[in-house]
Amino acid sequence: MIPIAILLAALPIPGQVPGRTSGTAPLEVTLAYSAMRFNTIPAGCGCSWMPGGKAEFRVAFSRHIGLVGEIAGQHAGAINSAHQDLSLVSYLFGPRLSWPVHRFTPFVQGLIGGVHGFDATFPNPNNSTTVPNNSTNGSDAFALAAGGGLNISLSRHVALRPLQADYFLTTLPNDAANRQNSLRLGAGIVFKLSPPR
Image 1 (cartoon, helix red, strand yellow):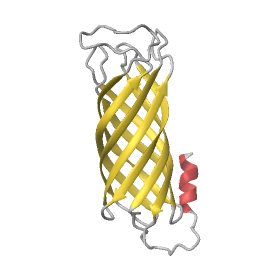
Image 2 (cartoon, rainbow, N blue to C red; image 1 turned 60 degrees about the vertical axis):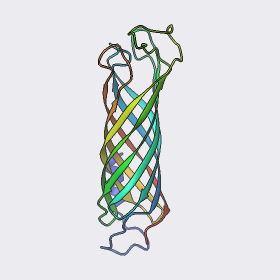
Image 3 (cartoon, helix red, strand yellow; image 1 turned 135 degrees about the vertical axis):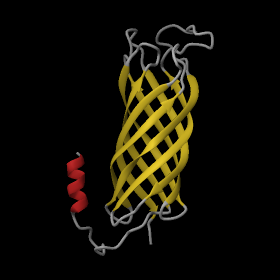
Image 4 (tube, rainbow, N blue to C red; image 1 turned 45 degrees about the horizontal axis):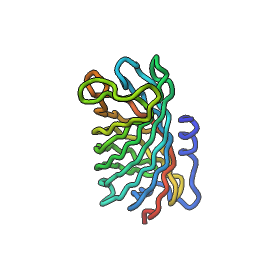
């Protein structure tokens, strides 16, 4: 899919002035698919790929600096020998640095917030399970995401994000270190609600 996105980016856009930097939109909304390599919830379950999606909102204060808020959801089935499911909903916000060059806008960001885990059994503070298998008991914890990606402008109102990669940290209880170090990959469409002038 990425080679196709690169070919699309190389095509001329009607009405675009060659060599002109498009800048960044003051307000953007992104809808994206994401997949996360998630580990050790509960303890001993190993790693699972968790497909999901996210909605992201970005407000730009300048061509290079913006504030991002995102809500994301991931789900995986049969993550351990007990065939438990696991669902995660995260809510994060933080700064983004962007470098718009023509139609290409690479960026890096650091987001902090929280995560809610459910559809699985989580240990209580005394390191014992509080509910039986297949419970919908949930747990809340700190979350952090740091990474970057690339937006490719297709028009004044739409951009393609062919790839985004983030280190994703959560601190959900798991009868071990209560820390999960994960990799999250994604791609999506960016809607420029206030196009650059």
